[in-house]
Image: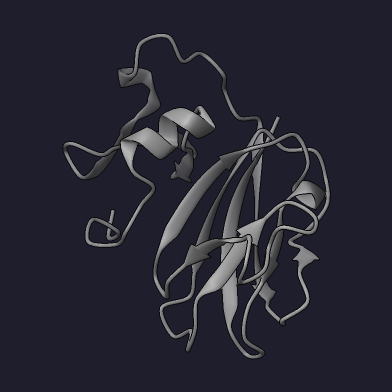
Length: 137
């Protein structure tokens, strides 16, 4: 899939966040930490949720945390651009800054399960960006 070498949330983090998602060619995938690859969701027993659609966008960062978007979703995969000059910070409202946010180094990825994009905030250096793919239920 081209992202085998990029950092992805650890298996422990994925379990804590419940599920990591990625859509490719209208199919659902989940990251297998041990194999270091994305595998078709149908190969994971016990997961039956199917995405109806997905949304993706690029978000320009600034030092003041802002929601990355809005709208009802099931889960989101967020990736810091490889060209970023500094870490991006991900979190909820009031917790997406250098002191409380989850740091994403350039090129790193994190998967989150939430019911609305507006609950996920991001901050970072002016000119840096993140990308996301969100599954719409």
